Image (cartoon, rainbow, N blue to C red; front, side):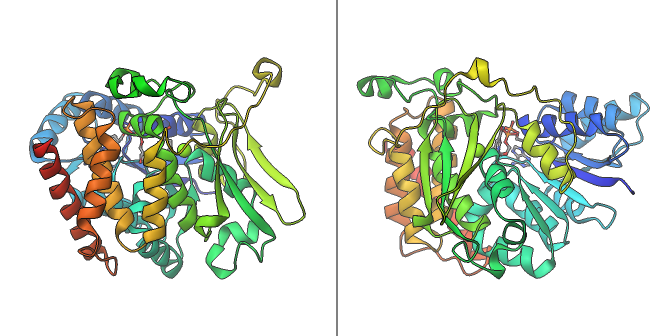
Length: 399
Ligand code: NAD
Ligand code: MG
């Protein structure tokens, strides 16, 4: 069997590093074509020496010069490119069979879309692509015959327990037609699930990025603390599985062992369980429909001991409510939600905004942008994204 030829968009991040860990375990199956990163050039340099990709892509000329010089000095033959068009080129090159979309935020949308348009196997970690442009992205996946495999652990779990014909072509049928009653999307509840409500205003970035079960990038860690991450994942599930907003229920499960469930009309509930380690969904997506060793330790149910479940608390986690509201509003509302959240989280991490300011900013910007944004093309969605960022900055300067 010919090896899969892989581009890793965002190879220096948490998902990127886990992806390369799986690649290294199966050199006969996977070959790296391109690696990309926005910062941490030393890490990208080291990855280039280990995996010898044809290309490495960075964001600007000065980073490209630095990396080029260091690679040359190490005797590497990797060619260094830069800019958004280079990201799109390495995601869509005919030599590539598979693209890991692991850039964080809306910045990941265009290269991920390029991979879908080129009909690649798209391993989708970048959930923001679906929050920003869900309908258009799914249309392109179907139109261009791309294979979409969800890497987000919950969506990967749901994919694993859905009937195969449905999960591979959700838009050819309906959830009900596949015998599904509901999708049960599990959430850990993050680090603030039980913290006294009156102390939430004093939360620091250090506390917010300390997730109890998962080790992840800073943005998604803050999203997990606010439960905006679960809100983004409801939107992601809506598009990935052709599911109505009322077909998706959020279930808080603090141990993060059940990665999500599907309830069928006959009363069966199927779940996927495992240790909280992203190499499981990554290896699943990379080898699909086969299974390969991922390096993840075996799940020890005796040491886990118990699995708890509770209802989500919308008062404690207003971001979750905002995400449901935006999905119900439809159109470009989720693009606005996503952009406002990115600005709010960056400001929070920079200590320019308090924790309680995150939902306050998003709610104000959603109300501000309503009626002015449209979702009929990628360009109008990018305009919605831009307008929401502008309004978010204006809100920040007033508060
Ligand atoms: P991260 O911050 O660790 O890594 C992000 C990567 O994107 C890095 O390689 C970075 O250099 C690159 N990048 C950042 N800004 C960029 C820009 N403007 N242009 C191009 N590249 C840029 O993030 P992560 O935790 O690996 O998450 C990546 C994506 O996967 C996110 O969309 C996240 O929601 C999703 N995800 C992550 C996890 C996880 O466990 N980390 C789980 C589920 C989903
Ligand atoms: Mg997730």
